[in-house]
Image (cartoon, rainbow, N blue to C red; front, top):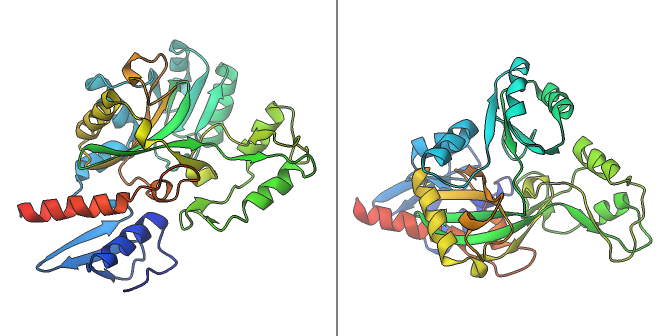
Length: 325
């Protein structure tokens, strides 16, 4: 059995490992993130969690956040009210929304540039000026942030994406607790590890300041200190598996979202109070965004809950598609 090179990001590596277990030949052709897989007379490509059988139109829908929002509106899928700001002069559009707001640059990924909880127009102008690029401003949804995974247009897994945090012991500073948490063997740089290291940036500093804390504060024993508002794994968050808690209505809804976005493998970021009751009936619940190459590591390596072999389910889908050829 071949071993995946360490440079491969986690999702590609999980598919590499699953394929070799099945006797599928894997070749790297100069790019450590793209794999050519061969089985009998058939071959296909894998990059991250994407395969040769994914719709290129679906990927475009997911990559362009504005198109995603409009698709959701067209199919009456739950999502927050929004406006598109192309340049600073367009910020007056934001007045039509109810604060607090979320700002998302339309051409950035992995949560870069996303600001949550903008309280007023002055803050909207300040945060927009940091990037000065086209962005979506939308009303803030409420609840917990979940990542839902659909494969072959069917719901297969869900995880609560818990924002980066530390737990106090009454002795160490927040800075020291972050350093200790980063020593976990799963944590690495970027997307190569099964968890990402917690980096202290301006947003972390501001979030602590707003709560009257600094990196030198010493939390009480057992006190949990959140470091960010958002729960992305790429910013140091954790995943807790909740797949078995998802109600039938929500499972059906997630399949509808996958088909509306034309993606047979899709990560759906949802904000809601719970996945155990229908999202459609929850106030201020809805789709945050969708991802055409969703990370698999959170489902294979949740910090709590049952691991899910979603890489295997992707290869099952590939084999079904091969049978149709």
